Image 1: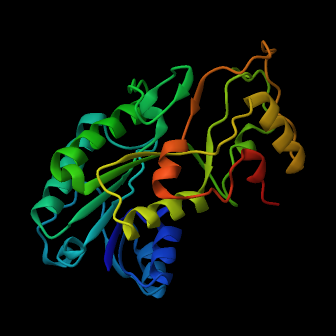
Image 2: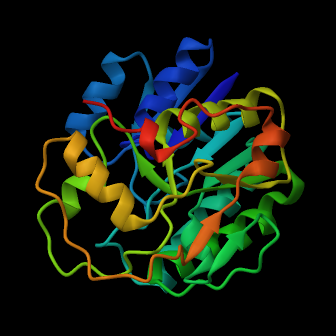
Length: 272
């Protein structure tokens, strides 16, 4: 099967490699010439693409001749305004729907739920409050508008992997707020496995959660993780000792996918 992965960065590149190892033909996009050369050496049909580029050029023909498109363009901190980002995404999705793309996976985020407290399931109402949350929610709506039951939206919790863990950012900081808020994390390997399962088992028309099953508090977890990583422990303000904030429940999504997480707890995610 030919699969297009738009956005071959920290998540997209290992996803493309994993799909290729399973026998799929990969069309991969990136923004830089250096990354394009790297992806080409891996055996991908590589195309330089940046959100907002003109899509009618012939060199994009193979990209939009794929059966499945995985849309993995993080909002990030330096993207255009919400209006421009969503506008460019709309052009991309409409073009994909008008061509030969049969199915779409959009990698969204659990920030679409905002700061609500308590258990959050796939059926919980959204309340996006950050620019990233609002942008992703707008693109989710567009994905369903153009692909309807031929698309699946995946909302991962905080992404971690061998070379990416929030403890490195928090280490040594003091006066950190929200010590009792629950931690919602998911490992890169489990996200890749879930995406592959959606594609290979034709699980479409869904909005899925991906998160570890355990949710320790921030103070408990990041203090522990800093010790494991031999980092200076972060210092939190004094809390109430009762877990607060949202708890992403991925139980139904994992059941639908038929998956058991390789990293079911954040305490499993420290890789030395």
